[in-house]
Length: 257
Image (cartoon, rainbow, N blue to C red; front, side, top):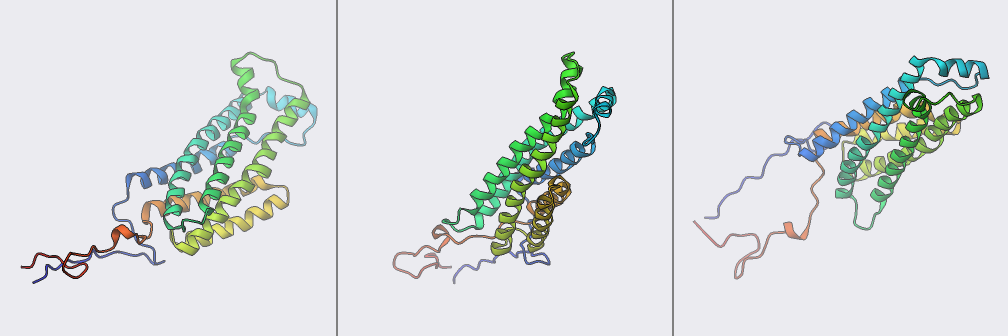
């Protein structure tokens, strides 16, 4: 008689996405990197609130405070560390999206490129937040004039709100569309991404894109949870098709009990 084989029982969550009982180390690494990015990004933004629209005297007084300069350096280093961690997270997200996207799609590459631009601009933003404090503390340089202090803070805000956040929004939009269409992750992650995209677009349109940063953090945390808890849908390939046995029927073992 033919040998009987039992198909492994697959466990699905409430949103129809297969649960990942034994997560791959690479997916765990991507999830941990995403959580670490969100934490460091939050620290980088919350550590210091550089003055904007202040008078020359107020600017010089603020930057003359050694505690404020230390906060600026903490903000810089936190955001500089967040950038590489985001790239690790992005690489795992790319692998998950590519596994379910058609070969001629190309949308995963677009999301990956947008994520790289976001990480690069985030690093520039981080450097601008702490370069003055770094020079004063370790280079024994004097404080620059009020105009330089003012434009340094303005550059940081513009780079984050009008460059980094729009590219991050593009990443979230493309990833969310692929998640909803191909179920690379749980569908609620895709719907959450659309909410993040809508909020980010409104913030950018109002010239306050930086306030959409918490939305990006929430989305990264949600995707990290999805990478850890779910596995990509299995794709059918030619290699997985049952091989035909010479002189017999396809998929039937030639050895009979």
